[in-house]
Amino acid sequence: MNTIDRYILKKYFTTFFFSIFLFTVIAVVVDISEKTDDFVKSGLGFTGIVMNYYIGFVPYIIALLFPLFVFISVIFFTSKMAGRSEFIAILASGASMRRILRPYAIGGGCLALLLWFSANFVIPKANDIRTSFEQKYVDQLSSYTSLVKPSNDVYFRIDSFTYAGVRNYDTAAKSGGPFFMERIKGNELVYNLRAEYLRWDTAKNTNKWQLDNVFERTINGLQEHVSITQKKQMNFNFRPFDLSHDEYAKDKLTTPQLLQFIQLEQLRGSENVNELKVEEYRRWATPIAVIILTLIGGIVASRKVRGGSGMHIAIGIMLGLLFFLMDRFSTVFSAKGNLPPVIAAWIPDVVFAIAAVYLYKRAPK
Image 1 (spheres, one colour):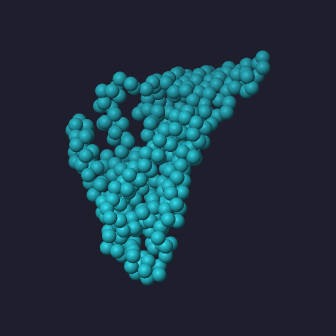
Image 2 (cartoon, rainbow, N blue to C red):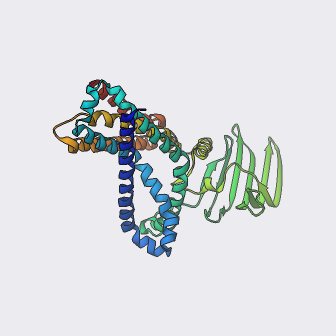
Image 3 (cartoon, rainbow, N blue to C red):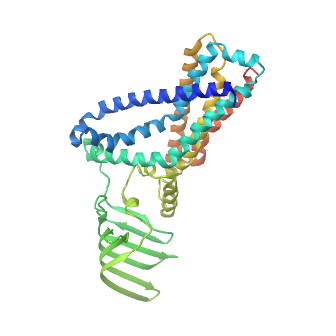
C-alpha cells in the first residue's frame, strides 16, 4: 500500500464517518420531535429513553442507510479530488484506472465486513431494544392500533403430522388456554390432546410448557386409550417467542436464530417464510452492495466535469435512491407475490454490478 492508497483511504473513511455521524444527529433530532408525546407519556427520564430506545435506534438508522451514505461519501470526496485534477496527475504518472480503484475496493471491503458483522449479530440486538420500546410505548398508545388489535388465538403446525392451537394467548404472561394438539397419520387422527390452560414454566429453569387439566386420547384403529392428568409438563419445539405475533421478529433475531426460526416456520407452513428468507439473504447482499457502490462512485466521480461536485453528488443521490427503491420493491414482490427470496435480495446487487462493469469499461484508462 503506497502513499496514494493511504491518501484515498483516509479521505474515504473520514468523509464516510463524518457524514454518517451528521446524518445520525439529524435523524435523532427529527425522531425526538415526532415522539415527544410518547416519551412524556412513557414516564421515562432522559437516561431511560436513551438506554431503552436510542441505544437501539441509532444502530438501526445507521444500518438502514449504510450503503446510501457509503455511495454519497465516495462521490463527494472523489469529486473533490477530480475537481483538483488529482486523478489526471495519477493517470499521467502511469497508473491505470484498475490501480486507482484498489484503495476503493479495500475501503469498501472493510466497511462491508463491518456492516456484515453488525447486520448478523449487532443490529438485531439493537432492534430488540428499539422495537420493545415502540411496542410498549408507541404502538400501544396509538388510537389506530387499539382498533385493529390482532386476535389472541394462535393456530400453527408443530411438525409434518401435528397441529396445535391455543385460545386467548397472553404474550406478556406467556400463557393461554384452552390448548389443543392433534396428530394425524395418513388421513386418520391417531392422537388428540386437550388442556384447559398452557403456560411457559421457568420456575425451575426447565423451559418447558406446563399444562393443566390434560385430556389425552391415543387412537389405534378400533382401540382407544384415554388418560386424564391434572398437571403435565411437555417439551414442545415451539417457544413463547414463536407465539407472540411479533411483526418485528425477523429484525430482532441474529442470523443463527433467524435460520432456526425459518426452519420452524417452514415446518408449520407459515405464510411469512418468504419475508424471513429475504431478510436472511439481504444480510449477505447488502454488504456486497457496499463494495459495488464504492466502485461505481469511484468510477463516476473520478471524471472532471463542468458541473463539478454538484453534478456528481446529484448523480450519486439519484443512483443511491434508485438502489434503495429497487431493494424495497423487490422485497414487497417477494413477500406478497411469487418472486423467489434469493432473487429479490440480490437483484439490486446484480443490476448495479453490471452497471459497474459497464462504467469501468468506459472509464479513461
